[in-house]
Amino acid sequence: MGQSTAFEKLPRPRDSLSTTPRASVGLRAQIALALVAVLVIAAVLANAAIRPLTAAASRSVRKRAGVTLVRAVAGQIALLPAERGSLEPLVTDTVGEGALSAAAVLDADGRAIAQAGTFALALPRAPLVDGVEERSSMLRIVVGLPRGGAVAAEVSLAQSASERGLVAGVLLYTLVASSAALFVLYALLTRYTVRPLEVLTRAAERVAAGNREARAEPRGAREIARAAVAFNVMTEDLAAREAELSARVIELERAHAELREAHAQLVRTERLAVVGRLSAGIAHEIGNPLAAIVGLADVMRDGGLEDDEVQDFSKRIGREAERIHRTVRDLLDYARARPTSESKSDEPGVVFDAVDQVRRLLEPQKSVKDIAISVDVAPSLPPVTLSDDRLVQVLLNLALNAADAMKKPGEETARGSLAIRASSVDGRVRIDVEDDGPGIDEALRERVFEPFFTTKPAGEGTGLGLAICASLVDQAGGTLRALPRADGATGARLRVDLPAARRAEETINT
Image 1 (cartoon, one colour):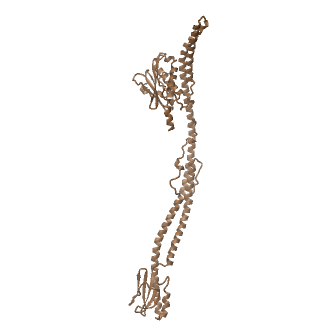
Image 2 (cartoon, rainbow, N blue to C red; image 1 turned 45 degrees about the vertical axis):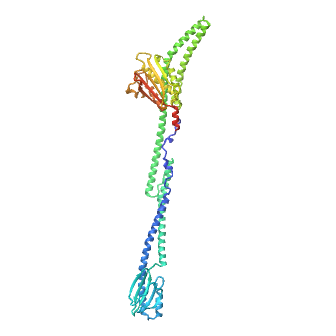
Image 3 (cartoon, rainbow, N blue to C red; image 1 turned 180 degrees about the vertical axis):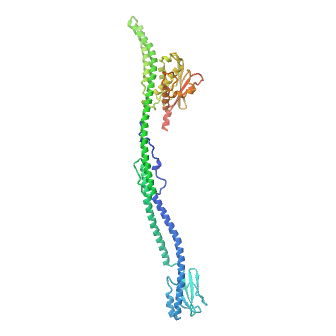
């Protein structure tokens, strides 16, 4: 698998930063709606307050003006002769819009001498009494004359059209003035609050999109300007931390590559060490057929043989040579297997073939010739996630370790029994390598897989074999454990659990 770049491994911005916010109304619209609501409320309150006040003020002014006007008319009438012709113009002049609604000069008996306008209320009857009487929206005023009689008048207390227009004008002025003030407030809020926030938001979006050079201009209200400065400092710190993280990721990638290479080299070294051990046993195994070949060749060279004897000797020489060839080929196949760094972890391994190759590699070994090797592996077992060459390396290491454990001090060969069994359990393949040696102490069953830990005498082991086997099995998604024998007898059992290859594919697809 190829290495990803450092930036691909850096944390990505959250998706919520790039998604549309739930609120569909922007800040400008919200401010405008709020100001319109304030304007409507102010207009309603102004109308509710101005109209009653102006109505009350108008009634009070009309009362005072009416009383004053009627008294002034009575004073003038007292100076004129009590003739209808001289009184009529004076009374008529006092009646009209903004003045009296109706006026009349009454004699002592209550009869009208002069009259202008239409009275809404009945004229007062004798005896005439000075006074002011308010009924509904009309005010009646009676002022006595020195020669007897009185001046009676009516004043309408209802607002006139001009007064209502004045009230409407005041309300309109108030509305216009309020609108202008609110417009100025909206402009100020937009300039010093909304626009700086939009600038800050756009800068944040650019940073979230990966542009670490984006900065927000400190403008607007003091609080927003401080927020912009803090955002710029945060962005600079983020860029610095991202660069540091990128450098660390690159360093970790380099270290990881070096570790993988070192691990591959260790696996290769351990494989070559096993090849050396196998070669020592095979050298002895090859010596016997070579001696037979040399002897048969010498006899044939001396001559004097019958034709059927020559044929028999030739066949025997061929069989011994084939035996040597097969032994060397098995060793070379194992030694030339692809290194771990070149193996593909997703190549399935066939347990039956791997165990058969291990058996063939063990058979020529002098050190295991007295060990009874039994194999119980069905060809129908599913392939596993560990490749063939890795599986052979793991099982061969376990078998050779078992043979070493069964070898008694001072003896060149080991004696005992070695069993390799495999079965399918719950979609996994279980392989047991069991011996009847001294076994592994319970306190050491976990430590035997630690690198450089060995129970062998000094100089006879590196302590890397089981550690590398455990690493290879773990990389394939399996486990390697040290267990006591299932039957309770003395000995050790190394169990390899590996996922079946088909289940691994199903897991990847899901």
